[in-house]
Image 1: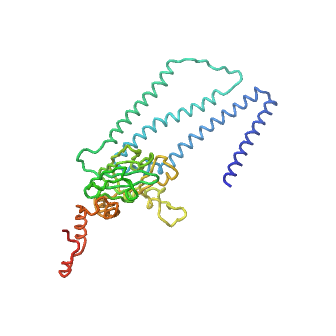
Image 2: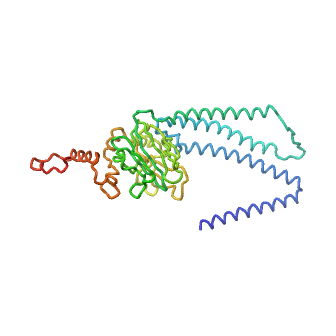
Image 3: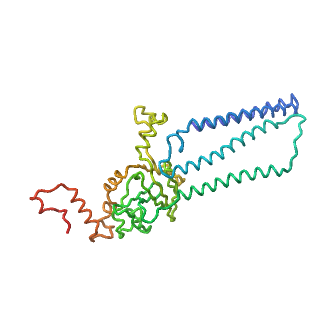
Length: 389
């Protein structure tokens, strides 16, 4: 039904244009070709002048009206330490291109109005002007040089890798159609080795279970990071091009099959701190779900998110993960509460290459289990099943 209505509108517009063309032809016959042409150009010139006034006014008004919904303005400040550099770079570029945009459109439509057809007017023939050509070549060159150099300075600041032995959190994010696979190191703080030849139904990343660093790695359903601590994200892809995008942190890096990339950033605000900033603005104090006016407000339902910024297939829209920023103490407690993927899904099963072998992580798990249990009575002590040999 909607398609039929759209088709009807298109046909109606076409009919109106056709009828206007016929009326214009009739006017030409009545008034004469030259008089009709002058009237037509006058009408068009004034219409163009009115259009540019309405267009620029609407563009400026809409940008101001929706500023609190755009990244970098209102409450949507960067939630990372480097985000301010990115926003400043965008603002400088927007200022330069915005000035050019406004001036060129005013001149474009003004010239169409000023130099419209008039009887007896002669055109000025100006085949060459050295001064004019120097101006319109040098001015853009200077602006472009500044934007490029400024961009390189920001790039070098933002893309610095972690220094050797620098305290940081390292995680791994792998894109696949149509999901993100998250991997964190366990208490050893190290991610284990991978081999794509080892990918299977129970090993979606091809982790090498002979590598002890893999034994305590875990795969959560959300990204949880500590505020104020540097984070290094390893970014990979299992199939096609994806793009790791954290808009509120001004983080974006392509995930390329066979070519690991990375991004280093430091979260500067917890999720709760960001929410408290959002609730100061009226745009974020409306119901998150219009169908449920009594439900949560937009600021209450807000969460940081990981999205895919590369069109990767039919379900590209589904590649989202929640991101939660917490205090360092909360982060440490969260890491300790996570369960090793190897121990929960592989250890002791037929696809475990270490089946029948004693591993150091088994003893560590027994010690943790023993420490977590309440003290037993003397009568129960001889039967302690958590004692390691």
